[in-house]
Image (tube, rainbow over all chains, first blue to last red; front, top):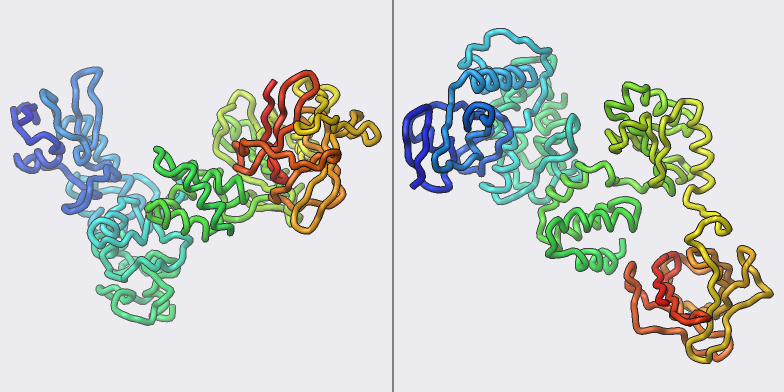
Length: 225
Length: 277
């Protein structure tokens, strides 16, 4: 067993456990977004940052990917952590203001005003769908592409992947694409007509060449928009 | 796509750490782009999912999914170059070549691309053409860079370059000199051999300058053809035991006057060679 300090309290954890798992076990709240039970930790959203180390050597690490170490001192709510987390939440809110998940997250941190220009992105690159697709659905149809500003998620060569079984798992776990389904931002809505909570591309056989991640989306085609 | 070629590339790198990058690099340099079939083939053979290969291929600027031109012009738009007005340089290239960044001129000669730092920030704005760095590029110097690119930057002057020196060679079998003073290439007697490929059988004259790859031949040999080389005197095939380190084709040995053996690759277009003194 590994013994370390969590917010000043001495706790023990199994070797190989992450800070996040241990904190959850002891009831210490750490907000997460890209983390999901059943998927491998990714460390992409940076919401779960915690501070480890002392003084000059202290640093921020993602709790979801950082394994516990003997004698480490973890602070989950220090000034630095709270500030960093707030900034991440504000940036996420700016890039994806229509997402209920992101809105709730921001609200829970007391962010009630938008500082940055809203981008209305479709994707925050949390990678949940990519991991869902390959790890739970054993498919691997979608993946990350490009780099920097051009980074996005799509199928290889932007064509319908023969690996996709249209299970809808990617849509199910997406915290950002609620726009398409909830239709609360008409001028930005991709399909302009799918006030529809069940993804039509999953249920219907007529979209042989279409997938949710493609542009235009299958729902768009269906409504003829 | 040539399946055997891709398979050879995969076999060469498979199992090593970072194999994906090495394989993609080799395919890119062989075809000047990554054909979709090749990527699917690599995914199938290496077990890496296609989405990961595609992700790696789109992550790095050095990979392209469309055939690139003979010359690659990279205009740096990194921060240091940007503040020194690299954007103007890039625009000038676009208007002079009449293509946008990421495109190739219709004649397939020059591909233009923008990159986000080539690691030579002190020299900015910087333009890299086929591995040659042009520092402090101004709008006015764009035209001369394009002209030099079209002229070929890799061309070396055999009379000035110290890496180039003349050799005299003999047939390893009959020891007859292969030099042909009556047919000089680059002001030196050429090396005469006989080659055959397919139904063609004729003479080939090579520059005797070590480091020069100039040849003159009776029949135009298609690129990538592996030829048989013969001594024009004893008609024995010039065949050694080694194969080319670049492309694995058989090497052609010739004895150097004064000791030593020079071996050249028998594949047309391959520059693989060995010098053993």
